[in-house]
Length: 126
Image 1 (spheres, rainbow, N blue to C red):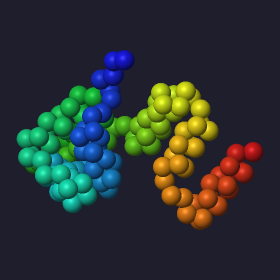
Image 2: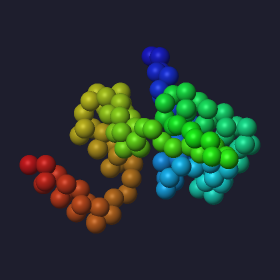
Image 3: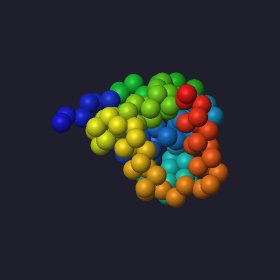
């Protein structure tokens, strides 16, 4: 199975998450700071610039030069996440939401508050 060019590598995804989590346009230096603080990743600036260049080529970000270059998301985080979840459901669980949710619940401890929220969400589907 060939992966489409629009798929993100793990490293690209983490850089993209930094951009999505920013309040607005973000510089390479700010991305590097987030990578260190949130993900304990200490990449060189040339490496991060390469990730940003690839993200731009894949139409995930756009850039604007204002003294320094600022990067902004083009693709929405929710859109990417929802698409990734759908692909995961189709690939690993043969399109079955029930099997996917069951696997998630087996691998994660769910608090009583979360269980109540899940029940409410299910009830609201009717």
